[in-house]
Each structure stands twice: as structure tokens, then as C-alpha cells.
Length: 71
Image 1 (spheres, rainbow, N blue to C red):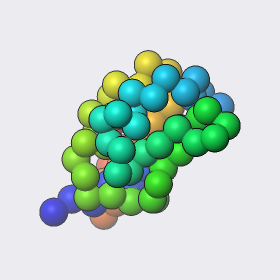
Image 2: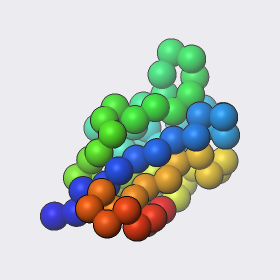
Image 3: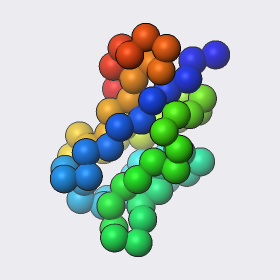
């Protein structure tokens, strides 16, 4: 099973919230209105779709074992 490392560039985030809708176990929009990772790594493949859906490109997802960027 692949584990995903989640990186969020909060300077790019505009708080649209699509990431939270697609991967609520891993991502959330916090009290400041910006996306944040609930955990640094997740096994949930929904994080790939969540990263791809970010209109600002603020979310990057990497294979935790290899470091390869997946989204």
C-alpha cells in the first residue's frame, strides 16, 4: 500500500475547500480559512484527487517511500 506525504503551500491557498470535501480524513480548512493537513502522511488515495482539484495548486502529494511527486 502506498503512503502519501502531503505538502501544502499555504501562501497559495485561497480556502476554496474542495480538498476537504474530497479527502476529509486527511485535509481540512482550518479556522484561518486555509487548507491544512490533518496528518503529514496518509494512505488515502483521495488525497491525489484533492490535490488535483485545488484551483490554486497549493497541494502537492508525494510517494512517502520514494519522494516521487504524484500530484
